[in-house]
Length: 125
Image (tube, rainbow, N blue to C red; front, top):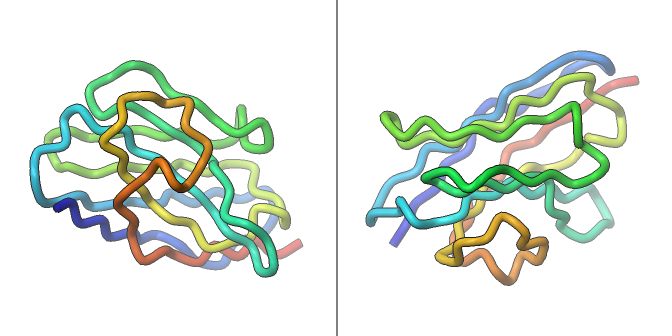
């Protein structure tokens, strides 16, 4: 089993920045793919970013490309999502996810078997 705990959400003005953290624990996950998803009220949960735990590049949704960055600190077992130039449409609950499949091009939530509880990000315009 893998446990994921997100933190770092909050209220920020448009144009501001936030960094989300995801503490990962449990079985070894060096071959896993880590992802960030988000879900706004009344909308489906959508892919935001993905990264292989041990490299293999990163992948981003077009809506966040150039503004968000996913990174992994292997020493502390923490996954980060740095969010810059935030917009009101980035407002959502953000979820950290882990997949046993080794591909950063997985956009479906069904491919991820482990999820955190989510953290709220609210961007005021």
